[in-house]
Image: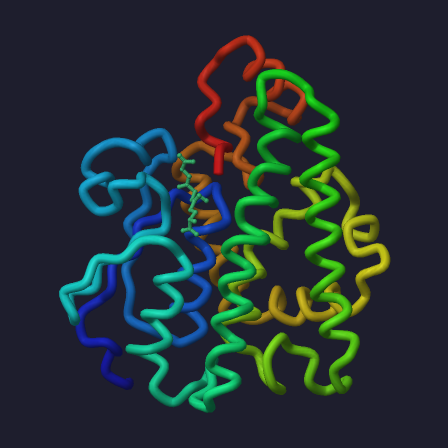
Length: 259
Ligand SMILES: N[C@@H](CCC(=O)N[C@@H](CS)C(=O)NCC(=O)O)C(=O)O
């Protein structure tokens, strides 16, 4: 058996319900890195000990004993892991143009996907009052951003439908975990989510089928179970989002689903 790489496991702090921690775990799994998970409850994300690791109180965060570096913000974690642990450029390029293009797509994901998908989910499910115009605004933005990706992928040769060059890179992977939640975020069937987006759908499904992502889903399921949560983040014992929304409106603790 090959020696673990890197020699000391990198600790990844995760709150299981939200998509962002799984963005980090997906990259570690795909590169086959030596890591350990530090799962904790979403309710504790703004408390010690986690705020000593990330003063902003958001997951993921990593602690790497091999380099003595603690890092938060999933985009920064991606750039770090790729620079330090993907020396063979399995999920990156060393050529000038492609390096910068990968960073461009990563920044677009961080600024154009994370916050908008997150706000769509918030106004759809968690906000204490129904504001249809807010849901509409963020869902429209989701469609607009996916439309950008659709055009880019459609313009590429059939065997190279990735954001940069002709292979999957970290710039593609970064988009998967939030897209994986789209049906729930938009309250649509998957066929409705992907309407008019055949290239995005194929791109998404290729990544979702990877063993590395399947392992993420399996690990997430176990951690959610251990925290008494259903797969969508709704606590066990609450059957539907409608029932959950009612509890939120009544002011009961709702922290488990917030991402
Ligand atoms: N920009 C951050 C966003 C991280 C983020 O929002 N993480 C969620 C979990 S998916 C969180 O910890 N939320 C805590 C909160 O909203 O207080 C990143 O990409 O790492």
